[in-house]
Image (cartoon, rainbow over all chains, first blue to last red; front, side, top):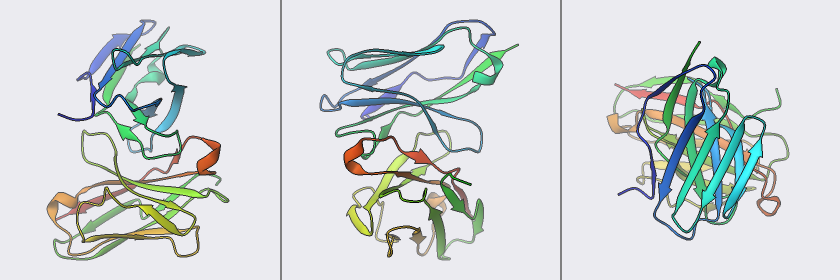
Length: 112
Length: 115
C-alpha cells in the first residue's frame, strides 16, 4: 500500500460544477500538505499549501486537511475548462521545500 | 526565463546506453530536487541537494543512477546502462532555502524513452 492514496479518475464535470478531489495517507507524521496542478507535458505547479489541520481558501480553490482522519481535500468552485488538468496531492514531514510524497494524480476534464 | 530549465526535453536511448539529464534551477535557489514520474503516476523523490551537498539520495532506485551539483547551481542526473524500466519523465525542482519553507518550483521535465 502506498503512503498516499488518491481517488482514481478520470473525472469529467460540466462547466460551473463544484469539484471535490481527495487523498488519504498512512503516515501520521506528515505535517505539510500541498495540491499541485499539472498540465499535459508540463511540470507540476503549486495551487495550495497548508500546514497541519484546517481549511485554506484562495479564490475558487479551498483546501481542507483533517489530520485525525488522515484525509485531505481540494474543492474547486465554478469549474472552468481551463481547470482541465491532472491534480496531484503531495505531503511532507518537514516543509514545502523538503522531500515530497505525491499521490498518483487524478485527471479532471471540465466540459464547456 | 526565470523558471527551472531542463534539457533535453526529450531523450531516446537504446537499452544499455548512458544518459545525462541537465537541470538549471532558478538563480539563487539553494535546494534542488530530482523526481521520477512514470506514466500515469505521481512524481517520486529521487535525490536532494543543498548547494553542492547531496543530503538525501534515498530515492535513487539503483547504483546506475548518479546525480551531482558540483558548483551548487546546475545539476546533472546520470543513468548508466539504461533499462526499459527507466523510461519516465524526470523532473527537477528548486526552492530558495531549506529554512524559508518556500515551495518547490518544478521544471517541465525530461521525457526519457528507452528502446
